[in-house]
Structures are given as C-alpha cells and as structure tokens.
Length: 436
Image (cartoon, rainbow, N blue to C red; front, top):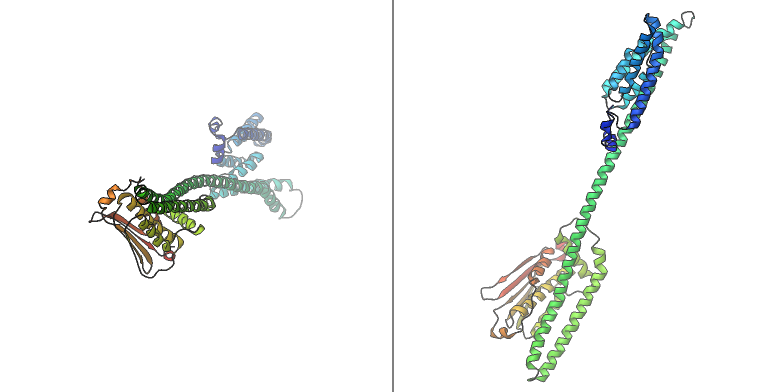
C-alpha cells in the first residue's frame, strides 16, 4: 500500500529515501514482520518437504522466500494475498495471510477486488482445514456435521478478524485524512477572511477619515469665510462709520463662537460613535459605508436641518450678499441624514459664492416634492465690486464633498456654469424612508 498524501506531506523528501515507505518506522515494522513470516514459513517448510518427498533444505529455502514476500505488503498487497492463498495447501504462511488480508482491507484497493481475494482466502482455508480435521478425526465418530462446522469456524476465525480490522483502520485513516484536509481548508479560509477583514477595515478607516475631513470642511469653511468677509468690511468702515464697525465686529465674534460650538459638537459625535463604527466592518460598498456613517453622525447629535437654511441665508445677507430665498411645496420632516445633507449642500454653495463670486446675486430654491427634496443655489456673474473682495483660500474639495454626500444617500448632484456667467449647484435627495 502506498503512503497516503498526509504521510507524504509529513515526511517530505525522506519518502524517496525509504522507497514506498513514508517513514523509517514503517520500513522497520515491515522488515520485522517479513523476517518473522520468513522464519515461520521456513519452519513449516520442513514438514512440507517431508510430506512432498523433497529435500529439507529445499523446503526451508522455499519457506524463507515465501515468507519474505510480506515485506511488499504496503506496495503490492494483492500480490501478498495471492501468495498466501497459493501456499495455503502447503500449510504455511499463516502470519503472512493475516497481515496480508489486514493490509488489503485497509488499503485503497477497490472493494470488489478485496472481497474477491478475501473470499478466495476463506475458501482455501476452509478446504485445507476441512481436510486436516477429517484426517485427525477418522478414528472417532463425531458425526457428519463435525468436520464442516469445525472447518467453517476455523476458516472464519483466520480470515474475518484481519479483514474487519483492516476495514476499520482504513475507514478511520480516511476519516482522519478528510478531517485534516478540512482543517487545512478552514485554515486557508480563515486566513483569507482575515486578509479581507483587514482590507475592509482599512477601507472603513479611509472612509472615516474622508468623512471627518468633509465634516471639518463643512463646519469651519463657511463660518470662517463669513468671518473673513466681515473682517474686510470692518477694516474698510472702521474709521468712516464706527457704529457699523462695532456691528461687524459683533457679527465676527458671533460667527466665531458658532464655529467653535459646531466644531465641539462634531468632535463629540466622532468620539462617541467613531470608535464603535470603524471596527464594525461589513462587506458593503464604500458609498454605503459613507451613508451609514453620515446617518450615525446625524442621529448622534443635534445637527443642522432644513429649518436652519433660512438662518444660513440670513447670515450671508448680513455679510452683504444679495440672496433670494424661496420654498416650494409643503415642508415636512425627513430623515436626519437627509436634512443635514441638504443643509450642507446649501451651506457649501453659499461658501463658494463668497470665495469665488463676491458681490454676485444669489438665488436659493428649496422644493418639497412627493418622495424627495430638491435644492438649488445659483449665482450670477460677479459685479465690479466683487473684485475688491478679499481672496479666500480654496482646497478644491467643496464640490467633491457635496457630490459624495448626495450620492451616498442615493441622490443626484449636478453642478456647472450657467450661460449668464454664473454658477449653479443642484441636488435631489430621496425621502429617508424610501432611501432606506
């Protein structure tokens, strides 16, 4: 019988040095069994030579040769069993027959061949045993049933135990190999799952960093832009109109305090929910991860809503911007993440007007539809006064952040220049229940 795949894997290159044996212990065992079988057959060969009228040395040498065949039991178990069956009439090779039948039953030989050889061995043992018992009891009168019954019991006792034991050991060995292969497969799957989990965790961390950057941009950029605009106006009217300068200074202070308040609220939300959200990695698209993070951030704190857009427009008007604000449809409640995203879109659009089109007229539209809410911020071309406005830095991430927010909730975002030389930002967000 050849070495199994598990044995070859365990022994490695040493299997070639030991021929068909996978381990040194197996080779030593087979050589020892072959030596014991050769000695047994040599002793039994003396009686065989005397009965056949042959020289005793011939019988001894014949027994040694027959018994040594057992060393091949792992390589050619069928040949060992056939030799034992052929030598059964000579009443030698009992050890070889027992070990050969066991090895044959435990090997990967087809069951049909194994059953045929086991039947041949049983028949040969029965015939020889029947003849021997009949010769021994010729002088006694035990009845006609004694010889066949005794031969059946003896032949079954010599044939059935090694076959049954071999079948059990073979089934157990195959089960162990199957369990070992399954364990290896599970280990590979666990390693693959661990790699995928690490990748998803890395994606989630990257998405979380993107969300934090977007929140920082939305909270700080708008307030700071208005503060810069009011500071420029304060510098221009400080000597000419002290009362207006005082008013502008108060507006700058109020906006600074509002920016700090919103920043603290956002950081509080990140401390409370960020640690719980990042490890909970699931195999979902990054857009869905961003939507879930936005929903958690909106639900965890008192974020802005659609009702705050009017106050947002008022702040831009206080900074000197001409803003027309209109609402269509009946106002109703939406999911927190939908209202917060709508607010941030309008906020970022107004911030871009302060940065890039100072002095331009702006029109803000908000429409409540059957299953969605739409918003549009459109500004005209900046007038000559806008050229004197302070230049505000821009990171170029405003439109990208708005698009990510809207698409993460399943909405539509469109932005671009108008024919009149201005710029238009439009977004449509589905109702929170339908989006979920």
